Structures are given as structure tokens and as C-alpha cells.
Image (tube, rainbow, N blue to C red; front, side):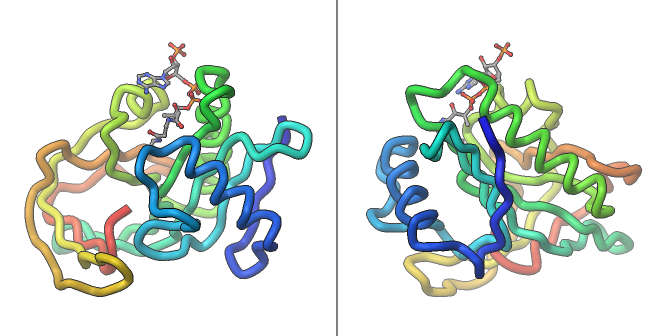
Length: 177
Ligand SMILES: CC(C)(COP(=O)(O)OP(=O)(O)OC[C@H]1O[C@@H](n2cnc3c(N)ncnc32)[C@H](O)[C@@H]1OP(=O)(O)O)[C@@H](O)C(=O)NCCC(=O)NCCS
């Protein structure tokens, strides 16, 4: 398996078509012809088996503020998925480790996301935190307003630097991952 990192602006039509196809197979009910849910990521980590796209993660590089004191650099992870016939083969783990290594080399403090697949993420070094959150809600390419609340399932975070996860409200300063 090979990994490639592709900046969003450099995405080719062939990449786009492969991503659309992967999302349709890996996610139930993903919007047709879509390569992202809320907003385009900054870059993507793509896993290839020969010429087939078998895994994907979209990465949003963002500063978020946590509590009153801390502005933290994060990689927000979106649309991590593996083709159904390649799942449970370590592809998701290899992608996450690659993203963590990029973050560590780039002084990015945390990987962060929300997901129902918390068991998979906990196996991969994430923990659940329950800070109250503030974020921009986007629906069908429309900004709907800013929500403030604590998420029932919490946030999944993985440290990639030396910073301890702070207490206090997490202001995403944009949409949530
Ligand atoms: C979730 C997903 C990305 C995991 O990728 P993967 O390549 O299959 O996972 P890995 O093979 O790296 O699994 C690593 C470990 O997590 C476990 N794991 C994988 N998927 C799991 C799941 N859905 N629930 C619980 N554990 C899971 C594996 O059994 C393995 O544990 P082990 O090391 O003890 O055997 C993949 O199953 C997928 O694409 N699912 C559909 C899309 C989705 O739900 N994406 C997440 C959205 S945020």
C-alpha cells in the first residue's frame, strides 16, 4: 500500500472521481458526487493499492481556542474511511499514524474529530473529552449560525505535541470536524 498527501487545490479529476467512488462505498447515505461534507479540507491523505484508492482522510488545518488562555494548532480529521473489502487490514491505522507524524513534525498540537466510531479511535491513541463547544453550523452549503453546547459523545482528541489538553470551552472558530 502507498500513501500520498494531496493539497486540495492540486486535486486532479481522477483523484476526485476516486474519492467520490470510495465515499459511496464506505459511507451509508453520503451525498452523491460529493468529495466533502461541510467544507473542503486543506489536504488529503490517500491510501492506494496499485491504482485503487482504498483509504482516505481529509485534513483541516486550523487554530482553535480552548478556554480563555490557549490557542492551539490542530488537524481536524474528516471523512476517514477505508474501502469495505480492505477494512480491518490496518489501513485506517496507517493513515492516522501518518497524519499524527505530519502533525508532530509541523508543531500541530492535536488531532481532533467527532465520530460514532469511538472504539476504533480509542485503539488508535485518541481519548474522549467533554469540553463545552462553540462552532459554526453549515447545512447544504449554507451557514446556519453558531451553536454552543456540550456534545453528548464528546470530542475525540490525540495529542501530537507536548501540550496537555486544556479545560474550558472549545471555540472551533469555524465548522466542526
Ligand atoms: C472505521 C474505519 C476507518 C477503520 O479502518 P480500518 O482500516 O478498517 O481499521 P484498522 O484495520 O486499522 O483497525 C484498527 C483496530 O480497530 C478495530 N476497528 C476497526 N474498525 C472498527 C469499528 N468500526 N469498531 C470497533 N473497532 C474497530 C480493528 O479491529 C483493529 O483492532 P485490533 O488491532 O485489535 O484488531 C473503517 O472501518 C471504515 O472506513 N468504516 C466506514 C466509514 C467510517 O465509519 N469512518 C469513520 C468516520 S469518522
